[in-house]
Image (tube, rainbow, N blue to C red):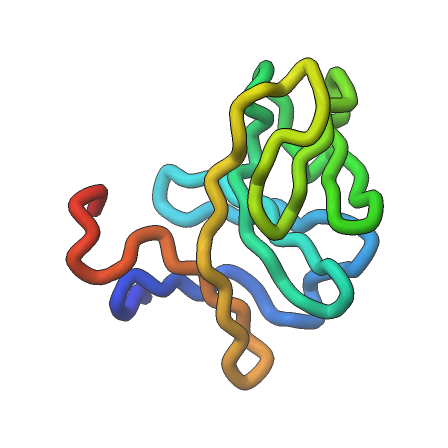
Amino acid sequence: MATDGWHKVASEIDVDPDEPLRVRVDDAQIALCSVDGTLYAIDNICTHEYAELSDGFIEGDCIECPLHQALFHIPTGKAMSPPADEDLTTYPVKVENGDVFVQLHAPGDARK
């Protein structure tokens, strides 16, 4: 159940530091990634061509698309290398009592 736009998507122990975790909230496909112990949520679909980033590889603080090897900066969603030139959407993440929550839209956000 969502409270103030927050959705429980996983347990903290489900997120492997070396492997993105695919989750879904409503129609949003999201990849949860752990970078140096901090969890991030980014769009799971590459902005260049349809490919699930959760099938890709985490390299430091970047994720590599499995299709054409475009790199995205996980904390910011910034496209770091071709062929992608459009950034990913990032989402706020919080962990409470071992549960991971992602906020799709902040309260009052017109995108609701």
